[in-house]
Length: 391
Image (cartoon, rainbow, N blue to C red):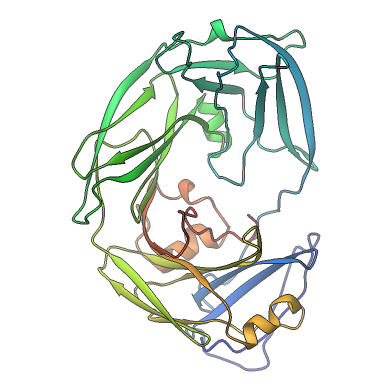
């Protein structure tokens, strides 16, 4: 894996079989990297590299069909009973790039707008309903309250604040244990719920955001949150310091941050890695740079075997990726973050390639959850690095 370009192939959305042929032979167990590059109108490039592949694993990659969005259905309905300071939250789709709908309320106009995101083949994984929640500032329903609406809505629907309820809401606590000095840092809990067994069975992404809280937290203290016990099942994520976990089910009573760490240094086109601890299955790297701190010039994600890899050589790019040629030649790629990940139910990197990468499966279909330890140069947590070709 010295970064030399062995073969490249252009393909488009209609291609179903992509075959790469090299001019040199190499052993079936010799490792190589495979990179996908997607360019957006020539102004930004997204890249994904799988390292530590062999001719035997995964042999074939079965790519997802990309979701190509078009303008969705928009409907506006009247509202009643809301104050100008009132607001609610409603989001379905736990992946940040897979929001299934958007709901916007304009109290001054007396309306609420429902916008269903759609692909060219129709709605994107539509849910069986809408879940709205909020805490009102005028003393009415001062506790966590919510409203569940069946889809589709009737034409004469009116969003009434009096319909929000707090049935089934229970106060819960969790504890985070760690040897790190994280006292007073913010912890974030995002909790999603499934409305029915059918929704979860049809698509693990059909979960509704039912709680989201940032709290300043010290290790071993109690983190308090609200749980709607009327949900069929749950999915949640927890972020604290350089720790992130994402799991199926309701939050655990206790989390223990693993004793692992990762650091890096960039030498020319080589990213040298320093990894401590053994409780990890794989590592990821994200290269990213912004133009005017707004638009990313590139986002390049790497996935590698963290047990056997001490360095990653940034691979040579084909001429078609013209926008990045000068950056590559002048060693100007910037590392944004690096991370180590450990998956429950997946034993090692080779098994991850077979269970997740080979068919581009959602990892929560193959694992009940995973933990991440990261090091980031971003001034914010940029969420876990994704390694699906079409995101």
